[in-house]
Length: 200
Image (cartoon, rainbow, N blue to C red; front, side):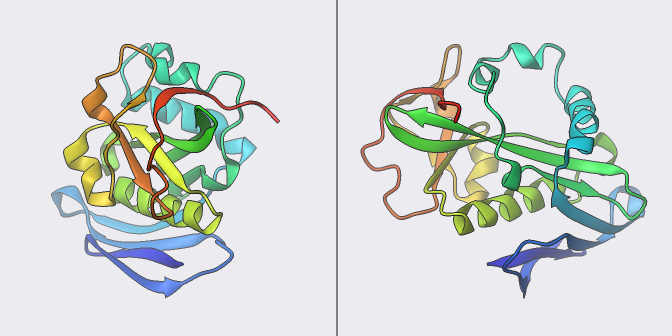
């Protein structure tokens, strides 16, 4: 696996890593030409939880927890190894991503999201950094398939495409139900309703 490093907005994969220590992303000029500096990507800790929740509240509409996808998360712990934060050199939270286990019939999968970037840091590639980094980690952990609910044109750049026959709880637009295979053929024959993972 390789760490994603962006220099002046270009994502390059040129720093090998195996054990996923803290990673550093060097960014060039951000919006309005200001210097973005160094971004540190690390696994979310218990101490980060409420700060990440505040970021989600800032970035998403009120009532986000009433969305159908949140019913799949109720009472189920997120996948700690894939929940990441991105902080600047001063330790200020710039972006975050979380993953949750789900099931489609008897098949296991992961639900990507939420992923959010602070409004003052948007346009710097941080969302893409966290998505690529976390998918690489998921593949290294042996995860076969990942899905999300989102805009197909945006997520296609990361390898996501529409899932046919996979049903998220209503009301969800089927055109926004997307998946990616981290193992060849992982989504073949997988259909049915998406349900909560069984707690261990």
